[in-house]
Image (tube, rainbow, N blue to C red; front, side, top):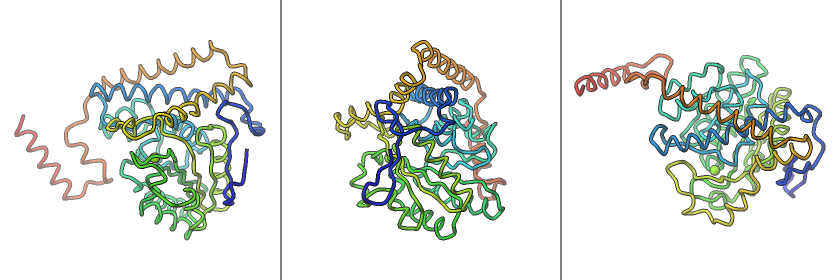
Length: 358
Ligand SMILES: [Mg+2]
């Protein structure tokens, strides 16, 4: 349903929290196989997320940022982008990576501190997950500038959380994208929390989308728990950007029904009633209801899909555990195409010290 919220920024949603359709879907999204594939990514991401948290708890994976409840955003991003577009993700984006063809083993490597996991076998252009807050936005506009300079129709798609929208990098990147008309799609995962800081304490802006309007970039707000609304809005945005070479901004409204990372305990600051309410609105429940009601999705099919996803994850975990450790000192090699002299010296000193200890 589209509605004008009194601010001239459109709000879009197709599935309500119970899975009822609010407006007719475009024909391609009436295809059962297409819908099932989206559901498969949602489920795989959810189960994989739970598995990674368990691996972190037993010391196999490092600090990890869960995306529980926010799977619709990444799934839609991965589905809508063309292969040659460039994805510049932040740390809560494994769903998009999975949908873009990044291997589960590679994702485990990344979170396990092995940088070889960021050299994707099936993705030549996408960037690794960015952990520093908002710096990826600056990278994205540089990439968008290059895409435009080379006269391509490719788009730089960059994501960030609501917390990042309070940073200078965010404002500067939006401003330059608007001023230079760079083919960039900004997608903000507004999950209401920047670690323990609620949105209302971060900004007095009426919505996060208004920050785009201020620099001349068109924006839309979307129900971030509705994978169909997200997919349609991203596809429309990408088509617009390819046509007019102007940036676009999507605020995806969701709720973080998990800790900020495995180093956090959200029960210390999130009201349990709010948390409980948000659990009922998460994306998997409504999408399964929709499939059940409109496409005769059965319990058997659901169980088979869950079992297949878990099997795929178990195989990835087993493969990951068998990978040889990254050679000591190799982490120096990944920052630049060619290692600069000062880092080369540090690497040499590190290896000497290591040999000395052995
Ligand atoms: Mg947040």
